[in-house]
Image (tube, rainbow, N blue to C red; front, side, top):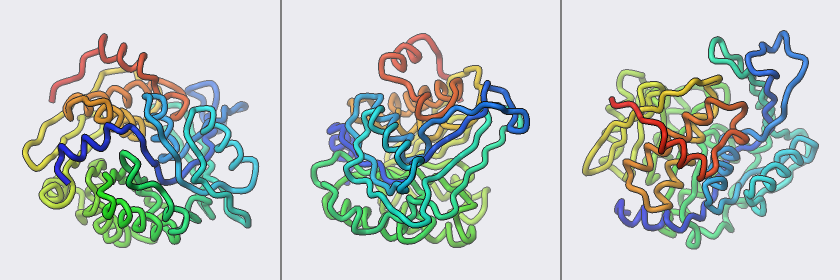
Length: 328
């Protein structure tokens, strides 16, 4: 798929976001350590859910594809998604011991503690049947969270998504989202990720994630550079406070960051994805879309939580208007 056809398809502004959803509990007020906290605020969390909310707030139509546990936490996640305008018609409720992810997080920059409970995660129960009936031909693209690759049966479901989307010539976007605690070993992650991302059209990861697939951190950027000469049309190598490097078959460019007074490190990656894809969907250039993703990330780290912190289009446009992105 050429990059022009890829971007033209994204302009449908209709997406499936595939992966996890859960509940995030933030120690209140901001700056409070867990050990001293008496109050926590509850928010929708999970990478795929956060990306879906980011897109919905930026005027895209999006459906989450996942599994919910048959309990109050699962119902909480479903309810919050509806409030944000994210569709859940492709979400299945599972019983037994499966539970939606629960994360307990501090809103602090220094020594920020984040504890994520993933044992028996409901989203890992997603199977190939759950994704077989998606309207691949009608959608603008499928966005896959790499966490879904860590366990079966969701791993097979993701490869089934890739197969269906390739057959329908539907763009596949993957956020690598490597979480080592969900994998048996880095070696397993390397093999599975390499197989998946080699078939995707847009691949987004940070220096650590590309380092895992390359086999060592030093070779991460070289791996990303080589990858874009194969199936992917766009590869984005994120470097945290040092911005990102965007690679295509014809060019590469660096994008800086917006200097803000951050209160936490979490949520930047999910918001970056939302801003990027929404930008491309709105017909922005690739350079401007990456910059918009950077702006979204900057805004989210100045606010409590992730999904709740995702900006609407009007406030995002105003932020970009009055702030300057750094040059690399």
